[in-house]
Length: 163
Image (tube, rainbow, N blue to C red; front, side, top):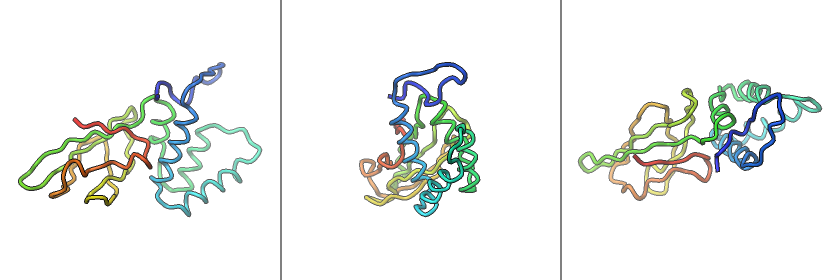
């Protein structure tokens, strides 16, 4: 339902029932597809277990480990999913320019630095990555119809909103 952040208030008994387990699993599923390399992903999972065996750790420890292992800064990704109730929203606008359809897109998030790739249909039934940021970008999908444009929400836990 995305009514609460996954991470609660530290230092107090902040027990709450909610969607933290589902949201956490979907966040990790999204990260796997953002990384888009099964060798790296499964190596990361094995390395986390080895690195942190029999230790008490924080989310910051895991985030730093993932950033170091992947050589990519996913801090804003984790901050969005862990510290805010809302999931990222991919905002879309569609324009006709002559015979072409142009998709304008950007992220709407609580974390200003959030910028992960996401897969969309760039031709009918074929997915490719786009790199949304907080600023509007454009994708020319040519003669493809609006109804054939899809965001891969089965692999990316994001909302999609057409403006």
